[in-house]
Amino acid sequence: MPISFSSIPANIKVPLFWVEVDPSMAGLPTINLRALLVGVKIDAGEAPPDIPLPIGSQAQADQAFGEGSELARMFKAFFANNFANEVWGLPLAEPTAAAAATGTIDITDVPTTAGTLHLYIAGDHVPVNISTTDTTGSIATAITAAINADVTLPLTATVSAVGGSGVDLTSTFKSVNANDISVSLNYYGSRGGEQLPVGLGITMPATGFLTGGVGTPDFDNAILNMGERAVSA
Image (cartoon, rainbow, N blue to C red):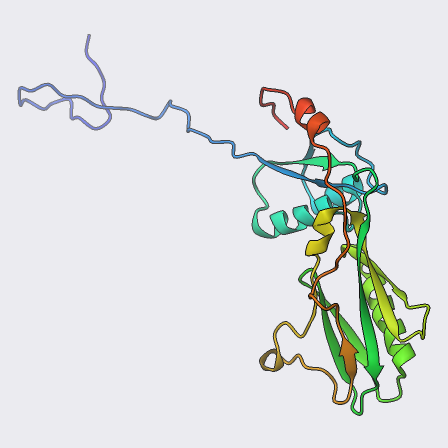
């Protein structure tokens, strides 16, 4: 029975053993690189704790785990670098007797020139416009409003009750990991057009991070609920 080849001519007369591979009917190999992000959710998140959940967008992560939560912030970093691979979230409840991390920004002197305060919260830019007519209290109020306007940040702000010239910061979630939330100024410096308005006196948290966060999540139920076999999202 003659065999039809795609690349070997039918009229070739050279005696030899000829072999041809036709991959046209073969399937393409696929590798499903799943990712799992594990972190603390907050009460505003709708997803129950300790149960893995496939996530397809940042909006879904915010709804499931709560905006500004540790796990929602983890998805923000993931989606900034990978928008195609399958990813799951495993929310953990805040630990029993956990405490939020805190910090304070103090305004000590008013500026002599107008400008913009370039505040960075966990790497996110929070600009605050300042004028020469502002008082230390109004600057603190403006900083508080700018921070709270971005609900995706991992902390909230209130004007200090004492003196009214400071901003008290509190992490959105309670965990020892909240101590990793950075608070800084002018990340890009003068070369990036970021510098303090002349005369403005401001002090940031001493370590550059929030402090005082306490609590380590319990992973036992979360690990049990993951099962032992992979499933499709």
